[in-house]
Amino acid sequence: MLDILKLIGRENRLFDQDITDKEEQLLTTINKSSFLVIGGAGSIGQAVTKEIFKRNPKKLHVVDISENNLVELVRDLRSSYGYIDGDFQTFALDIGSTEYDAFIENDGKYDYVLNLSALKHVRSEKDSFTLMRMINVNIFNTEKTIRQSIKNGTKKYFCVSTDKAANPVNMMGASKRIMEMFLLKYSQEINISTARFANVAFSDGSLLHGFEQRIKKNQPIVAPSDIRRYFVTPQESGELCLMSCIFGKKGDIFFPKLSEDLHLITFSDIAIKYLENKAIIPYLCDSEEEARQYLSTDSKSHNNTWPCLFVNSDTTGEKDFEEFYTDEEILDLDTFNNLGIIKNEGDVDSDLNQKLEYFTNEINAMKSSLKWTKEEVVKLFFYMLPEFGHKETGKYLDGKM
Image 1 (spheres, rainbow, N blue to C red):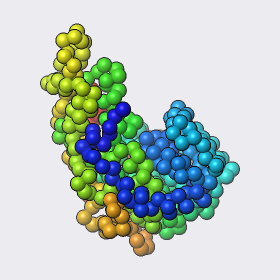
Image 2 (image 1 turned 60 degrees about the vertical axis):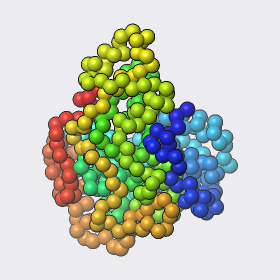
Image 3 (image 1 turned 90 degrees about the vertical axis):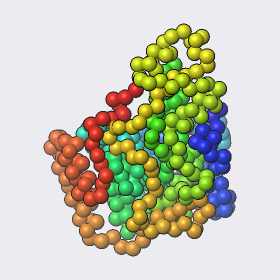
């Protein structure tokens, strides 16, 4: 079994003290409340669903587009915790669909709605069609589910953001930053909080998860050597979301507080630790061809080594390092032990509402025409975020091994 903490260079879990301090309140609140978790079968969604489930909620409904992941979630919960007294159900639905709207119309009564659905990959901007779906999922599906929550009298709405929303340089991070602007607008009508957090180690589709797949499929490990990231464990991601959902005030954005327990680490360093955990020695290659050829030779000559290709990144949207907040944002670093909060209090000005309306109208016009370019969308994002640091290199992760 992987010791994820050691692989990401840590010894201690981040939020143990904060969870312990608030455990009694968490138990009391969750036990008497009803929850809807949207996107609950993804890596972060499963983690937060487990945190709610193990505290015996009155009602817990989980929606996700992935039928297979929902099946695994149920098996995992039954195998780990058994059953709860409350109403627990899962639904294989696309939240952008008519079927989901009918599902909400049929009941829709939840104290807490948590939206964990997202297109999270930087590579999603490589073509204009996937980019538009990212905008729909990350922004407009969020707006729709907020409106539904307001209509149904939901007490609290939580939506996950990303560290990449702070000074974004890629379209995924920028889409989440624009989503945060929509959250701020609707926080005038319903209590909304969110969270920015680091990369979730070994989450589905992540590069670290890819290390496991490469070993299983007898393929080389490839990782950037110059990209440094913060990492949290899946359990920590669930705890962060839950704490923001239950304790966040209007407009709050929770994030992991920087400390000796949270530090930047390169993907190549984690790859080496991952192989060492399996008692395998990294064999450094100079090219993709060399790495592929290495495993095609007689395995007896490998001497318990594995081919690795560590290179500098040159793809669109990559940031040298990650950050959780900007210099202009107001911080609360005192309320919790290892959780920081970005405060967004006060009324929303008319300029924000006008910008959001313009953005919505422009995107709807593009979709109605069934014709748009990435350049048009990027230009619109620059209008919404004048300091947007997007740089197009013409190279994407799908063009590499």
